[in-house]
Image 1: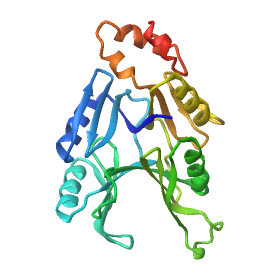
Image 2 (image 1 turned 120 degrees about the vertical axis):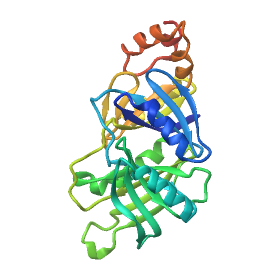
Image 3 (image 1 turned 45 degrees about the vertical axis):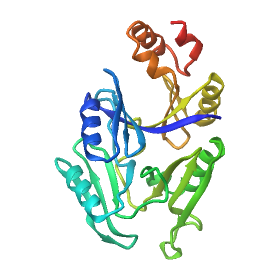
Length: 278
């Protein structure tokens, strides 16, 4: 399978503004595409989509983005910029797991976890799924599920809770996996939280062929919920978009975009041939 996996942030008509802000902040960043509906951009080499979805959903702390800053100068610079107009969940200081770390919610509501240490990968920004409340014990199951679906995937590390916490043996506090080359973190919390996974944060799978779309749609959507326009919610509540790689090109073609959008809105699973003939 040939897939391209990256995160999507849901905005209330601020996607272009947010993309410009992030690209001005993070090094080696650029805007790839802008339309009325979406902005695609790279932040230090990691691809993102910003979606102008309106007010129906919002980003929240169920999904955050680890930034491996690599130096004290860089982490202070990013921390100051992201916290301006936003809020700080965990201030920048030394913690047991890092000499310098912070958790910040920026002016758009997007959650960022900043770490001064580097990562031995070209992917310096890593999405993180936070499993809370009744889903706290599901991290291991979720990661086994995802690595079983995506080819060339593996678990990079697992950190279980210490025995004195009193949770079932093997319950994971933190873990990291690689899905077809894309790194994804997951963590759990023993605290009660008033948020859960939602379409405010989703993961996009760009597919080359209809066969790939059919495969990911079926495998990720099993025991979950299918929605319109290639969206689905998996069995753990995480939102995914299964889309053809050619969709961006079709949506930016003035002669096709309106008909493509009208056709797209009639679909659940996306059919490439139908879009091309619209």
